[in-house]
Length: 187
Image 1 (tube, helix red, strand yellow):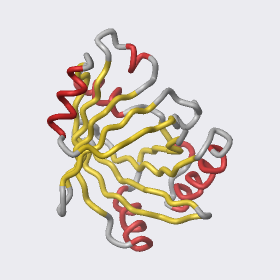
Image 2: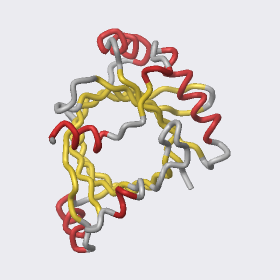
Image 3: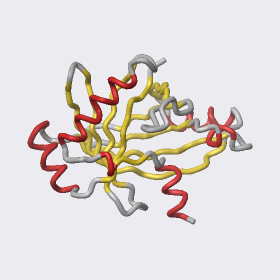
C-alpha cells in the first residue's frame, strides 16, 4: 500500500518562497488542476475520510486526467492517506463511469499550481505552490511516497525538513482539506 506522505502549510510570504524554489530548483511547472470530488449518495466516502476524485490537469504543453482514490488518514497529525491513482485516457468517459456506479459529484473547484521536483535524503519529493481562487491564501504542499505505515515517519521527516528549508514552520501547517475550505467559503 503506497501512502502519500504529505504536509500542507499556509505560506506567509509567497513571493519569497517562490523565489527560493525557483533559485534552487529552476522554473516550476505551471498547471491548473480542475478537480471533481465524488461521494456515495449517503455521503459515506467523505464522512469516512475517503476521497474519490477525477482531476484534469492543464499545462502549457498538455492536458491529462487522473482518477484518484484516497483511503482514510493513517496519520492524523499530517493527514497522510493511502493513495491509488491512475491515468485516464478519456475524462468524460471516466466521469460517466463514476456516475454510472452511483457516485455523485459533491464539489468541484480549481487549483492553480506551480510544481517543483526535489531530491532529498534519497527521496523524490514534489513541492507545489497552490492558489485556490475561492480561498484567500497561498499554500505549499510537499509530498513523497511512503511504502508502508512503518516508512511514513521517516518520509514525513524528510518532508518537514524540506519545508523548514523554505522557511515554513510547524505553526504554518494545516490538515484542513481543500474540499472543506472551499465548501465553507461557498456557504
